Image 1: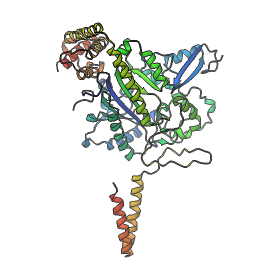
Image 2: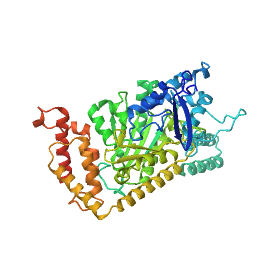
Image 3: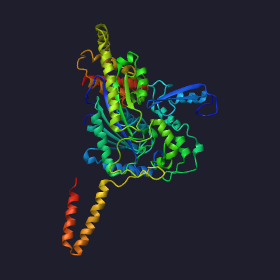
Image 4: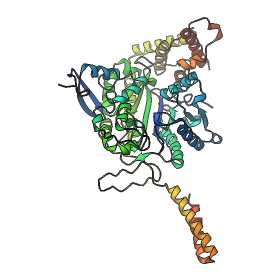
Length: 193
Length: 341
């Protein structure tokens, strides 16, 4: 059997890990097996190789480079993240992204590793204030750039600005009834906690 | 101001402390090595302005702090050991009475953590999310519908939340239950570690239990899951302690009294010996009165007699001794001082 990590040498170890309740087995060669033992884990998670209480921060730093194990540089298309300039192979090597936008740029490449780490691939829970879910695109990619929609606060400020401009215009054109209406709207908006 | 660890909390016989940590990043700023010093400065200024000193926030520029003091901050859990070692620019924002500390430019742009004594997840949740909301109002937090809060390392994606509870589990440790417990926790998506990671099994029978998975599980579900499991573990520990017969109880009380004797008289206390005696004392307290020894006093020790703090307490009269010995002298003095308070 060929080692499932380096895909070169013959496997001698059977490595087992349980992440998020899911059990996975890997056959590893002597070298990769030792590497995993030393790094405590294969994917940055505690594994059956290690004594669970010997975790140390130094180890944690190194072991993340194995996070994207299984993802190979052949997936690379030379694409770079427009914000941080990293390529997918840089992310594999570091085990970490270069900026939040990398998750959009390399979404398809990163998805399998992320699913494996968490045993899930869809966020559940809190979202930033005022975040508006974007409509799915025809390709089925619901992902917008990781830049938020304007928050309620920002929307309110914008609306106030528009109303004040309209008020000024109404006063200038001596449309006092209209101006009074607008003033009430401004008061109501400003009164909102 | 009383330090966060210098208080009492619920369930002290088993629970030492509770922590909730949130990882957040700001849109359009690179992460880690990709973040230039200029951009980091800009980001730190922006975050600092959200937490003004006038409102009681204490802001520390980490680059002005000597390595030993960074070590002390890590020993008292205000910052992560990685942040203590990091030479890149960083900022620490603290609000002591809430047990709140915010690291800026750690692995993620912002790491908010709320610490409290004993078992008090609700308090930590409130503290952490209050601070998070302030940031959310002021800065655009990187988020995607699919991956949730976007973090430097994919292991924190989703809620970006790590809930950890530190427990004192001598009975389960002595009954050799920890290994099987660890395996069971793993299956449930939880992880167990020694205190601050540096501990071995013998380090005070202290364990940190936290959630491993952050994607696909909501904040409430995570808190409920950790809460449910640590409560069960605490119950198992208490049941096991109750099973001690009168003979065993006498032995435990004897061990505790001897440990106290050494604490009161020792000239040298290494970290290893300290933890071994500390465990005897803390377990003994569940069975017997030990003068004016309290859980508060004992727990204060594990945050105040650690190596970095001791390096700051070396006395002049020991100047001719090797450094590790000087530290052990300082520890013996520090322990006595806490006992006598």
